[in-house]
Length: 272
Image (cartoon, rainbow, N blue to C red):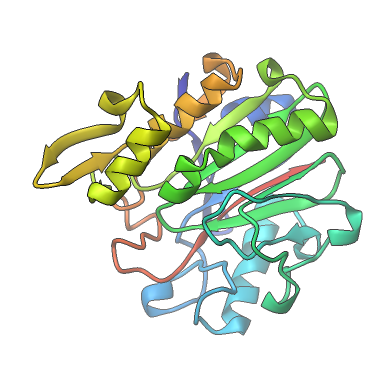
């Protein structure tokens, strides 16, 4: 397992990338931060999601700033209406631009996007949930997954690996994975209902997932829960990069839902 993403700043816009992905020179990949946008208040400043109550014109200007900084066109973006489930959508050229300029064209009820077509930017949004990003440099297939606790328990990351296998003929041992900034085990306290669901989904891994069980509450390690399920479907541990950055801890850099912030950052990947 490799630790950490790389931090970048261009034209005042901050973002992170996955070193193992960068080395392939096959993709543009980025995870945005808060800085470099024009939104105000709880959306300050680089809010990128139309599924917020921020002004649409501000979001669009933020998207253009972010796209310019990482070297993509806004027209290439494909977005989804994320609902904390385990639906995976196969993106093709006909989907290019869906959700890029307005919420009405979002791909509905989807929490993972995948493609093997060049020039399509897969883009999902986060504010504590876990972004999991995939690249097979052999078959040249990519995916991005949104995994909160519900998606993690449903093993959407593992299901994305299976979907990449089925649709593009990838081999799990060749896939590179980045587990991005999200709420860490230091701050993600959950109740007995979530504890029971996670224990059911990961019966052999409870000690790895919880810390400080007190009064029916525990701290959940979503990073490790996603890493474990990826190992179970054949991803090599050496091919997994964990950012290790807690969105709640670093609210100067990231939006955090539990930090009472309303903005969203984005995880994006595009085949060149």
